Amino acid sequence: MGVYNVHERLLAAKGGEVGALLDTLAGEEDGLWPHRSWPPMKFDRPLAPGAVGGHGPVRYTVTAYVPATWVRFTFSGPSGFHGFHEYAVLPVDETRTILRHTLAMRTSGPARLAWPLLWRPLHDALLEDSLDRAERACTGAVEHPARWGPYVRLLRRLAR
Image (cartoon, rainbow, N blue to C red; front, top):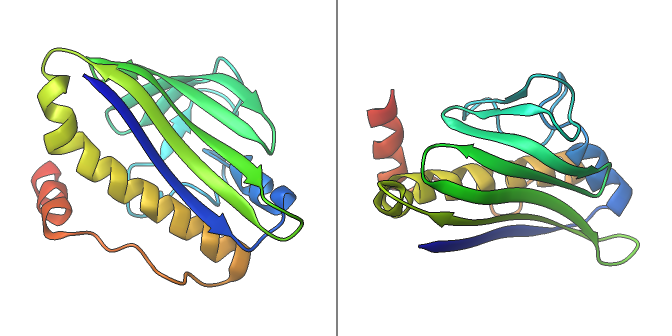
């Protein structure tokens, strides 16, 4: 099964400001990943091609990184995830920037069922929390904060 999943947020911030957030991923001062509510993103070395890690049971390798612009992670787990996810910083004009997260993969085996029933709802909630974090860092507030639905709350309770 093919999966193409995009989350993006138009931020009232310059591209360089949003890019600086991207560069903090998995670091001591991570300003983008919602690590207080979700498993933290961790790597075996600083963010750079070849860094290996992930978040929780989701494992990947940094396969491309253009500082302040774009980072791509290629999946190595869970089993049945074949593809990548990435963040991109896309300046719209001098005062607005789109922060986009794209997941593109093919699923196989049990992941064909696990993606829509388990992983996608959690992924979608995590990504909206990440975009909220970016918006708050850039503007000081979140205009429309993400809310976890009952199913996401149930999945999180079951995962504990």
